[in-house]
Image (tube, rainbow, N blue to C red; front, side, top):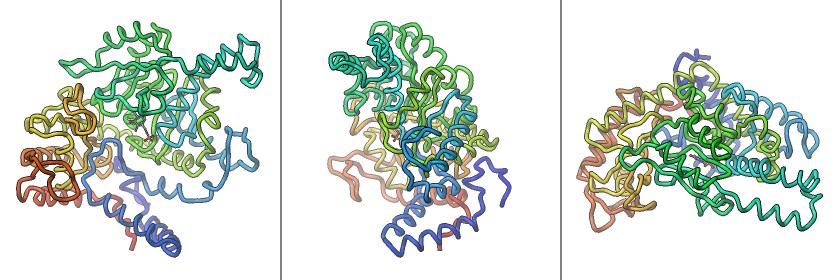
Length: 491
Ligand SMILES: *Cc1c(COP(=O)(O)O)cnc(C)c1O
């Protein structure tokens, strides 16, 4: 086994021979039943290896994490909590869930961790309903002298249902970088809560805490939500907690995007949400580099309510995924993950500098996390045209609204790019500067047109001849210098 000296230990440095044998054998077994699926698995690795992946929410999990997900832990029903299940014979799931929770608590210095949520949206649903249970349902039960909702009279039950559906949540607006699950109408959270949002300063693009405070005082939310998926700056959670306390709100922080920077101690003190928030939610698969899934961390007063996530909003937990969470969290507790997280942030700075230096407008003028948000209007493009032209050139990004976006949420005026995935491959600051150069080359060579371009894109633009091929070649050079899962061979 190679030594874990690389900052990306476990993704770049693993026993390649053992992993290759494991995958070859597994694919042979799958091939015998449904060869098309084995083919899709092979293609996905090839595609991931061949693309310059700048999608800020994606990463590469280690072979250990990936292998942990394919086994018998998947076959077990284990509704309930550790040591307290509605099914018999859950001892191995208990072991797995306990280990994942212990690693999460140690990694984030959290009083309590709930590792069952199947995704980020599920973690947020668990958090919302735990807060509603603690702050609305418990007092109602106490007042009625009931221990359980089943003991309430029909009248008391109906008034509790109305109260649960009549609460307020305040979160970051979508175009400032907030997330759909923070109370927006297309998501169930928007149907649950009377929602209002806070934006960013029109001049600086930065979060204006005085404006958040003013809105919170007026709106009086039950829950103040902080966290984002497209805001390129860190947030002062101590200040957010002060505001929450002032208006009697529960502070919930959704660190889905930047959990890796918290785990790797890039965000500490006022910028670490865990000690300040009553409830913190996250995904496992973004900058944290684990399996697809979610978690809820919380202060002790919310622990019992959070642990009722299943059956409140979740079905039976995914034992194999909780096991993979434990493996990934164990990886994140190694010193090498600190280096990784610091490299993610340093690379984002290099990328932002490289773009700014070449004349690109960045929302907020730069970054202090893992992502940059480009305003592509200066190129005369919509986000959709920019995203498509970049994809034609082998650069995978996603279009994203910018604050007060003139082109709306579908076409948008922005492109969001992040460094977690390519940093896992080993890209350094100089290579990210080269990536910035390639992005600018493509956007400068793209012209909007009246009709859609060729290929599969319906976006209307034309890319100057030769630019796509030239960029593809340059991207391949960078990718070849930083192989994904070096030595892993499926053939
Ligand atoms: C990605 C994300 C989610 C949703 O995560 P899923 O696992 O896709 O459900 C929730 N909140 C934020 C802030 C996110 O960035």
